[in-house]
Amino acid sequence: MKGDVELADVLAAIERRLTAMPDGDAARAAVLRDRDRASLYRAAVDAGRGELIRDDLYDDLVARYS
Image (cartoon, rainbow, N blue to C red; front, side, top):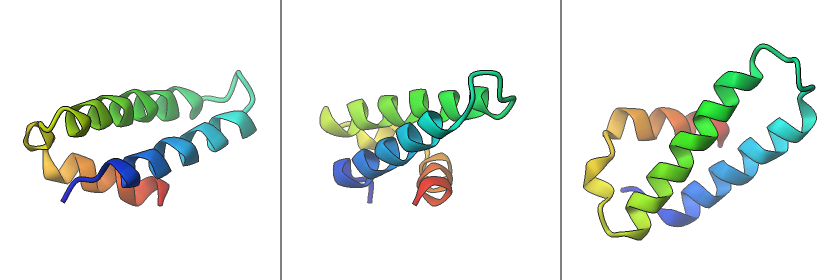
């Protein structure tokens, strides 16, 4: 089940991680991509279209930042 609250927590965790990373950090690009993906997922869930999100990608993102 894809949830808006869960995605809000993921986005908050991503923002905290980005704040702690220096601008030149090589891993920063991956975290930025994850932030973009989480934002898109949240928009889909908010629009009632959570079925558009692949479960394996969603679960991976949530597991990485929870």
